[in-house]
Length: 184
Image 1 (cartoon, helix red, strand yellow):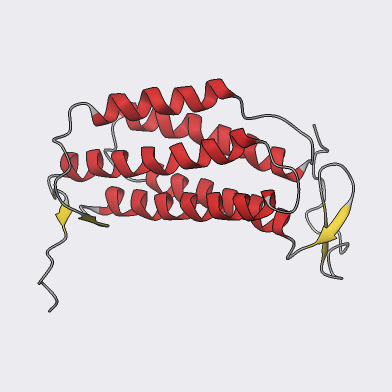
Image 2: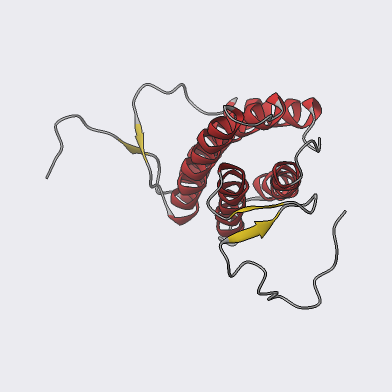
């Protein structure tokens, strides 16, 4: 799928267009390019989480697999009609979500992003995954998008929230609980 890049710049995008994986050209600010660009951004944010010390082998394995799936999702969005994310990928996210969530205490309060560097970076990844979901939904309103793409991003943001909780607790910093009247 695709060509190897021997030269990074091509000058073909200097006019504000970019090539999709099927060879067609679209504006760089098209909804499709925005959607797969935000998926790429979410993948980069997960890379920052993975670069943190002491995240644990279970988180490392899970998020490494997610990075590969996000790369596939970007490819799916870049090549109209391509199907790379499958129901089994979503099922795997749900299994991971359940496994990471099971030992956590029930959530009784809102959690603020924080709880140590790894948890805070995971919250950033979560919010970017949510934005990717919104971008893919916006694209789906004007062009065909497989339901699996939207479902995958929805589950991913939930998984990242739970992993952020795990990382906050494992760091010793603990979760940062929102206090209604604490403003300054």
